[in-house]
Length: 94
Image (cartoon, rainbow, N blue to C red; front, side, top):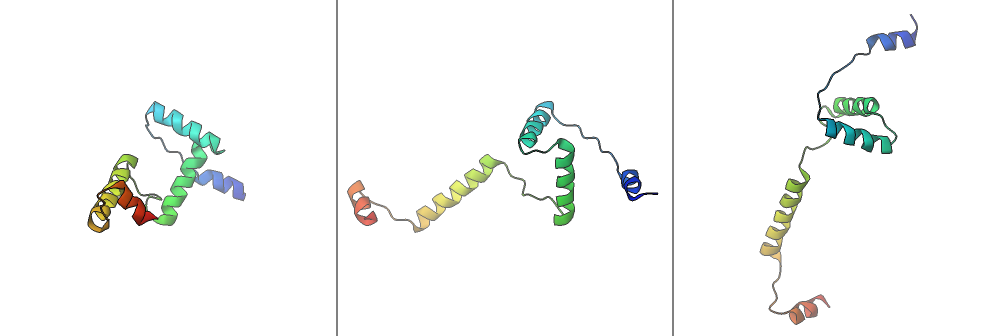
């Protein structure tokens, strides 16, 4: 049996149920990068195997931004300066 025949023989299919809008948007985004859905999924699974886990940290951008904002505010409150006027602030900056 030829190598190509063996490769085709060991391939398998997966079926995934996904929201139609998400699928459409993902397909459009991937197409802009020159990828089709099948290739992107193969890349994802390959990276899962390499990383031995998800190749990204699942986050919700708004939650991530809020955590960053909260951390910056906390740091500013603990370590930042306060000014009684704009002139005082400008004098410190300059």
